Length: 266
Image 1 (cartoon, rainbow, N blue to C red):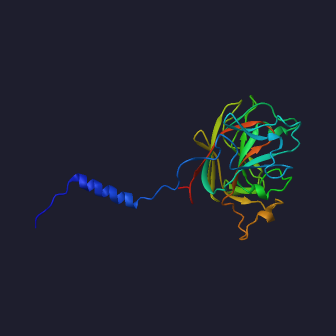
Image 2 (cartoon, one colour):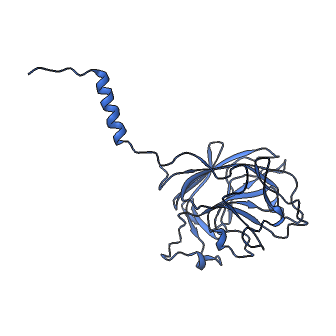
Image 3 (cartoon, rainbow, N blue to C red):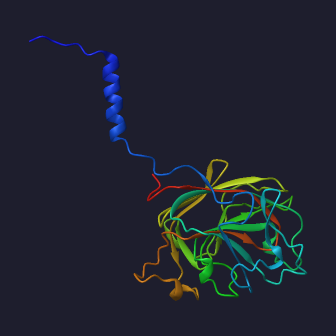
Protein backbone atom coordinates (compact mmCIF):
# COMPACT_ATOMS: atom_id res chain seq x y z
CA UNK A 1 0.00 0.00 0.00
CA UNK A 2 1.31 3.44 -0.90
CA UNK A 3 2.12 5.68 2.06
CA UNK A 4 1.19 9.37 2.10
CA UNK A 5 3.22 11.93 4.04
CA UNK A 6 1.39 14.58 6.00
CA UNK A 7 3.05 17.97 6.14
CA UNK A 8 3.69 19.41 9.60
CA UNK A 9 1.66 22.54 8.87
CA UNK A 10 -1.45 20.43 8.21
CA UNK A 11 -0.96 18.59 11.51
CA UNK A 12 -0.74 21.89 13.38
CA UNK A 13 -3.92 23.17 11.75
CA UNK A 14 -5.76 19.99 12.68
CA UNK A 15 -4.62 20.24 16.31
CA UNK A 16 -5.66 23.88 16.50
CA UNK A 17 -9.12 23.01 15.21
CA UNK A 18 -9.55 20.21 17.75
CA UNK A 19 -8.45 22.44 20.64
CA UNK A 20 -10.77 25.27 19.61
CA UNK A 21 -13.72 22.89 19.56
CA UNK A 22 -12.99 21.32 22.95
CA UNK A 23 -11.96 24.40 24.95
CA UNK A 24 -14.53 26.12 27.13
CA UNK A 25 -15.36 29.78 26.76
CA UNK A 26 -14.31 32.10 29.58
CA UNK A 27 -16.91 32.52 32.28
CA UNK A 28 -16.69 36.30 32.25
CA UNK A 29 -16.57 38.99 29.65
CA UNK A 30 -14.15 41.31 31.40
CA UNK A 31 -14.44 44.04 33.99
CA UNK A 32 -17.58 46.18 33.87
CA UNK A 33 -17.81 49.70 35.27
CA UNK A 34 -20.55 49.96 37.89
CA UNK A 35 -19.86 53.70 38.22
CA UNK A 36 -19.90 55.40 34.82
CA UNK A 37 -17.99 58.52 35.92
CA UNK A 38 -20.83 60.82 34.81
CA UNK A 39 -23.90 60.34 37.01
CA UNK A 40 -25.65 57.98 39.43
CA UNK A 41 -27.49 56.00 36.78
CA UNK A 42 -28.08 52.40 37.94
CA UNK A 43 -27.70 53.29 41.63
CA UNK A 44 -30.31 53.65 44.40
CA UNK A 45 -29.87 55.73 47.54
CA UNK A 46 -31.08 54.94 51.06
CA UNK A 47 -30.33 57.33 53.91
CA UNK A 48 -31.48 56.65 57.47
CA UNK A 49 -34.72 58.48 58.19
CA UNK A 50 -35.57 59.16 54.55
CA UNK A 51 -37.47 57.24 51.86
CA UNK A 52 -35.67 55.33 49.14
CA UNK A 53 -33.89 57.60 46.65
CA UNK A 54 -34.31 60.79 48.69
CA UNK A 55 -30.74 62.07 48.51
CA UNK A 56 -30.84 64.20 51.65
CA UNK A 57 -28.29 67.02 51.62
CA UNK A 58 -27.05 65.92 48.19
CA UNK A 59 -24.95 63.40 50.15
CA UNK A 60 -24.12 61.32 47.08
CA UNK A 61 -23.06 63.27 44.01
CA UNK A 62 -20.84 63.10 40.94
CA UNK A 63 -18.26 65.85 40.44
CA UNK A 64 -14.98 65.84 38.53
CA UNK A 65 -15.73 62.26 37.36
CA UNK A 66 -15.77 61.10 41.00
CA UNK A 67 -18.57 59.57 43.05
CA UNK A 68 -18.43 61.78 46.12
CA UNK A 69 -19.86 61.52 49.62
CA UNK A 70 -20.24 65.02 51.07
CA UNK A 71 -21.78 66.76 54.09
CA UNK A 72 -21.49 70.45 53.20
CA UNK A 73 -25.30 70.79 53.32
CA UNK A 74 -25.59 69.20 56.80
CA UNK A 75 -25.70 71.21 60.01
CA UNK A 76 -24.81 68.01 61.88
CA UNK A 77 -24.70 64.31 61.04
CA UNK A 78 -27.69 63.36 63.23
CA UNK A 79 -27.39 59.63 62.51
CA UNK A 80 -28.13 59.92 58.80
CA UNK A 81 -26.12 56.90 57.68
CA UNK A 82 -26.25 56.50 53.91
CA UNK A 83 -25.79 53.71 51.38
CA UNK A 84 -25.82 53.82 47.61
CA UNK A 85 -26.81 50.49 46.04
CA UNK A 86 -25.98 49.16 42.60
CA UNK A 87 -29.15 48.02 40.84
CA UNK A 88 -28.18 44.34 40.30
CA UNK A 89 -27.33 41.72 42.92
CA UNK A 90 -24.34 39.44 42.30
CA UNK A 91 -23.12 36.09 43.58
CA UNK A 92 -19.67 35.09 42.25
CA UNK A 93 -17.47 38.04 41.35
CA UNK A 94 -14.52 40.27 42.02
CA UNK A 95 -15.08 43.92 42.80
CA UNK A 96 -12.34 46.56 42.60
CA UNK A 97 -12.72 49.98 44.21
CA UNK A 98 -10.45 53.03 44.28
CA UNK A 99 -11.18 55.38 47.18
CA UNK A 100 -9.72 58.20 49.24
CA UNK A 101 -10.81 60.08 52.35
CA UNK A 102 -10.76 63.87 52.22
CA UNK A 103 -11.57 66.89 54.36
CA UNK A 104 -13.16 67.00 57.79
CA UNK A 105 -15.74 64.77 59.36
CA UNK A 106 -19.33 65.99 59.57
CA UNK A 107 -20.14 67.64 62.94
CA UNK A 108 -21.37 65.14 65.55
CA UNK A 109 -20.22 62.13 63.55
CA UNK A 110 -19.14 59.28 65.83
CA UNK A 111 -15.46 58.97 66.71
CA UNK A 112 -15.28 55.48 65.18
CA UNK A 113 -16.64 56.91 61.91
CA UNK A 114 -13.60 59.16 61.33
CA UNK A 115 -12.25 58.26 57.88
CA UNK A 116 -14.62 55.32 57.80
CA UNK A 117 -16.63 53.95 54.88
CA UNK A 118 -17.28 50.53 53.42
CA UNK A 119 -18.23 48.24 50.57
CA UNK A 120 -21.30 46.26 51.56
CA UNK A 121 -21.62 42.88 49.82
CA UNK A 122 -24.23 40.10 49.92
CA UNK A 123 -26.62 42.77 51.20
CA UNK A 124 -30.38 43.03 51.41
CA UNK A 125 -32.11 45.15 48.79
CA UNK A 126 -32.42 48.89 49.28
CA UNK A 127 -36.21 48.49 48.92
CA UNK A 128 -36.37 46.09 51.87
CA UNK A 129 -34.69 48.46 54.34
CA UNK A 130 -36.79 50.06 57.06
CA UNK A 131 -37.15 53.85 57.07
CA UNK A 132 -34.93 54.32 60.12
CA UNK A 133 -32.58 51.38 59.54
CA UNK A 134 -28.93 52.42 59.81
CA UNK A 135 -27.19 49.64 57.86
CA UNK A 136 -28.33 46.98 55.40
CA UNK A 137 -28.02 43.39 56.56
CA UNK A 138 -24.83 42.50 54.71
CA UNK A 139 -21.14 41.70 54.90
CA UNK A 140 -19.15 44.91 55.26
CA UNK A 141 -15.70 45.31 53.76
CA UNK A 142 -14.70 48.18 56.01
CA UNK A 143 -12.61 50.99 54.51
CA UNK A 144 -10.58 52.99 57.02
CA UNK A 145 -8.02 55.78 56.81
CA UNK A 146 -5.28 56.59 59.29
CA UNK A 147 -5.07 59.69 61.46
CA UNK A 148 -1.47 60.40 60.48
CA UNK A 149 0.03 58.77 63.56
CA UNK A 150 -1.56 55.55 64.75
CA UNK A 151 -1.84 52.19 63.04
CA UNK A 152 -5.27 51.43 61.60
CA UNK A 153 -5.89 48.64 59.13
CA UNK A 154 -8.31 48.87 56.23
CA UNK A 155 -10.34 46.12 54.54
CA UNK A 156 -11.57 44.91 57.90
CA UNK A 157 -14.60 42.63 58.22
CA UNK A 158 -17.83 43.83 59.87
CA UNK A 159 -21.09 41.90 60.02
CA UNK A 160 -24.32 43.94 60.37
CA UNK A 161 -27.03 41.31 60.83
CA UNK A 162 -24.74 38.50 59.68
CA UNK A 163 -22.11 36.01 60.77
CA UNK A 164 -19.31 34.18 58.96
CA UNK A 165 -17.02 31.22 59.49
CA UNK A 166 -13.53 32.50 60.30
CA UNK A 167 -10.55 30.39 61.35
CA UNK A 168 -12.78 27.30 61.14
CA UNK A 169 -15.30 28.63 63.67
CA UNK A 170 -18.62 30.46 63.54
CA UNK A 171 -17.58 34.07 64.01
CA UNK A 172 -20.08 36.35 65.77
CA UNK A 173 -17.73 39.24 66.60
CA UNK A 174 -19.05 42.35 64.84
CA UNK A 175 -15.76 43.72 63.47
CA UNK A 176 -12.46 41.93 62.86
CA UNK A 177 -9.25 43.64 61.78
CA UNK A 178 -7.40 42.62 58.65
CA UNK A 179 -3.61 42.38 58.38
CA UNK A 180 -3.31 45.40 56.06
CA UNK A 181 -1.00 48.32 56.65
CA UNK A 182 -2.28 51.80 57.48
CA UNK A 183 -3.10 54.28 54.72
CA UNK A 184 -2.73 57.84 56.05
CA UNK A 185 -3.75 61.09 54.42
CA UNK A 186 -5.75 61.66 51.26
CA UNK A 187 -3.97 59.09 49.11
CA UNK A 188 -5.87 56.91 46.64
CA UNK A 189 -6.17 53.29 47.74
CA UNK A 190 -7.14 50.40 45.44
CA UNK A 191 -8.80 47.35 46.98
CA UNK A 192 -10.38 44.16 45.68
CA UNK A 193 -12.86 41.68 47.12
CA UNK A 194 -13.26 38.17 45.72
CA UNK A 195 -16.71 36.78 46.46
CA UNK A 196 -17.49 33.11 45.82
CA UNK A 197 -21.20 32.85 46.59
CA UNK A 198 -21.78 31.29 50.02
CA UNK A 199 -18.23 29.90 50.03
CA UNK A 200 -14.95 31.82 50.38
CA UNK A 201 -14.62 35.62 50.49
CA UNK A 202 -11.21 37.32 50.32
CA UNK A 203 -10.21 40.95 50.96
CA UNK A 204 -7.20 41.85 48.82
CA UNK A 205 -4.92 44.88 48.74
CA UNK A 206 -1.59 45.38 46.97
CA UNK A 207 -1.94 41.80 45.70
CA UNK A 208 -2.13 40.34 49.21
CA UNK A 209 -5.11 38.69 50.89
CA UNK A 210 -5.44 40.48 54.24
CA UNK A 211 -8.43 38.55 55.59
CA UNK A 212 -10.33 35.48 54.36
CA UNK A 213 -13.50 33.83 55.63
CA UNK A 214 -16.39 31.69 54.40
CA UNK A 215 -20.08 30.79 54.76
CA UNK A 216 -21.60 34.28 55.07
CA UNK A 217 -24.98 33.85 56.76
CA UNK A 218 -27.90 35.60 58.38
CA UNK A 219 -27.67 36.13 62.14
CA UNK A 220 -30.80 34.85 63.88
CA UNK A 221 -30.26 37.44 66.64
CA UNK A 222 -30.90 40.33 64.26
CA UNK A 223 -34.40 41.92 64.15
CA UNK A 224 -34.52 41.53 60.34
CA UNK A 225 -33.79 37.79 60.45
CA UNK A 226 -37.34 36.50 59.98
CA UNK A 227 -38.12 39.03 57.28
CA UNK A 228 -35.02 38.15 55.26
CA UNK A 229 -35.05 34.38 55.84
CA UNK A 230 -35.88 32.70 52.48
CA UNK A 231 -38.67 30.15 52.06
CA UNK A 232 -36.21 27.25 52.13
CA UNK A 233 -34.89 28.46 55.53
CA UNK A 234 -31.30 28.45 54.25
CA UNK A 235 -29.42 31.07 56.24
CA UNK A 236 -26.35 31.06 53.97
CA UNK A 237 -26.00 34.14 51.76
CA UNK A 238 -25.31 33.08 48.18
CA UNK A 239 -25.77 36.51 46.61
CA UNK A 240 -26.92 40.02 47.37
CA UNK A 241 -26.61 43.71 46.72
CA UNK A 242 -23.45 45.81 46.57
CA UNK A 243 -23.49 49.24 48.21
CA UNK A 244 -21.09 51.96 49.28
CA UNK A 245 -21.30 53.72 52.63
CA UNK A 246 -21.69 57.26 53.89
CA UNK A 247 -20.85 57.30 57.61
CA UNK A 248 -20.08 61.00 58.27
CA UNK A 249 -16.63 61.43 56.70
CA UNK A 250 -16.23 62.76 53.13
CA UNK A 251 -14.91 60.13 50.73
CA UNK A 252 -14.30 59.91 46.98
CA UNK A 253 -14.70 56.84 44.81
CA UNK A 254 -12.77 57.06 41.54
CA UNK A 255 -13.53 53.58 40.23
CA UNK A 256 -16.05 50.87 41.05
CA UNK A 257 -15.70 47.90 38.70
CA UNK A 258 -16.77 44.28 38.73
CA UNK A 259 -15.65 41.04 37.14
CA UNK A 260 -18.55 38.57 36.99
CA UNK A 261 -17.26 35.06 37.68
CA UNK A 262 -20.37 33.16 36.59
CA UNK A 263 -21.39 30.25 38.79
CA UNK A 264 -18.04 29.68 40.47
CA UNK A 265 -14.67 31.21 41.20
CA UNK A 266 -12.38 28.86 39.29
